[in-house]
Image 1 (tube, rainbow over the protein chains, first blue to last red):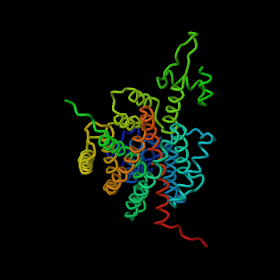
Image 2: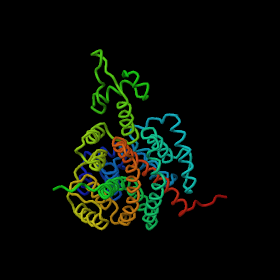
Image 3: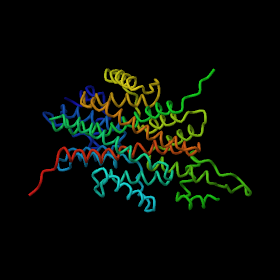
Image 4: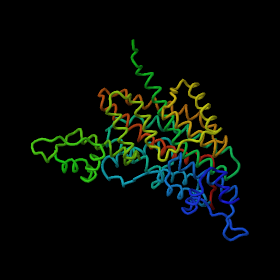
Amino acid sequence: MRMAELSRTTGVPVATIKYYVREGLLPRGEVTTSPNQADYGDRHVRRLALVRSLVEVGGLSIAAVRATLAAVDDPAVPLHDTLGMTIEAGDPASTPAPDDDAQRAAEARVDELLAKHGWSNRPGAPARQAVIDVVATMSRVTGTRLDSVLEPYVEAVAAIAEADLDTVSALSDVEERVETALVGTVLGDRLIAALRRIAQETVSARRFPPRETL
Amino acid sequence: MRMAELSRTTGVPVATIKYYVREGLLPRGEVTTSPNQADYGDRHVRRLALVRSLVEVGGLSIAAVRATLAAVDDPAVPLHDTLGMTIEAGDPASTPAPDDDAQRAAEARVDELLAKHGWSNRPGAPARQAVIDVVATMSRVTGTRLDSVLEPYVEAVAAIAEADLDTVSALSDVEERVETALVGTVLGDRLIAALRRIAQETVSARRFPPRETL
């Protein structure tokens, strides 16, 4: 199909499609009969839907989507490394963490926690570094007040990851697997965050019931 | 203290402090003896640490931090409404969701899910709308492949919210409570996302062990 039809099929404006092609998020159409016309297929429709969901709902920057898709398209990069990358890619400012006591204490604490639960703990992995940075910042701002959440979070997240892998393992098609893992991971973060607000409101209302009015 | 000392104490450059004051994220210093010199206190040190953590690690935009802090400072806004706002505030593009079958099906599904678990379900609440938008987008991109994650996510997130409220309920000082809830919520999202990547890698390695090499 021509670009105009690709636009109608997906609901994405032609200007946006051209922008994605220029930014390397969408492969160019194949040149067929006429040298000035490119042909787009189902592969483009799917990739476009994936890009839109990562940008619009997942909140990834164009650079982050490009890096993630390049890793997805590279069979040499294991899928879970790709998913770890989305953590770093979604990071806005990422100034280097200060090398202070809070940072060193957080690193030791996270190492101990991951070892206790038998979790992967590769130095240099972006997700491990993100956990350390967040724990260090929490302690800089709130002291030890948030220390008690780590254990329950690890247990809850273990159940979430089992559900994630159940979903992905059930798929036999490799492309569906990668796409589902990527969408499920990036959009899943937002889903979990939004569900968490509703759960907080629910638990908060139960523990601190609003006073009845006359 | 003077602004130069506030900068030394917090490690935040003077230019950044001036920017935060101009953007309304940090109250102006109090004018004391000399009309050209403002005085900053502990309140400014704490607020500056809070702003830095929301911007640098939480990834909120300046506008989002301003809206969130204004709600925090307004005693008429309940805390859980403030926390719900951070979902919308953290949203990058937020184009309006299309009014299609996927959107309507997602709304019905989410309503049913929240009702089943006795969770708060206020129409118009930003967190509820975010859940609906994500579920609709997931189904547009991956069909029904991610439907199975919703139930386990709700159960895991319920445990996370109980841990959140345990932490906040343990504090008697109202300001500490608000600050801890805000930091715990915004930074907690990043913590949970990063832990989820590590858990996914761990579960993935267990289910799909890498082939041994010779």
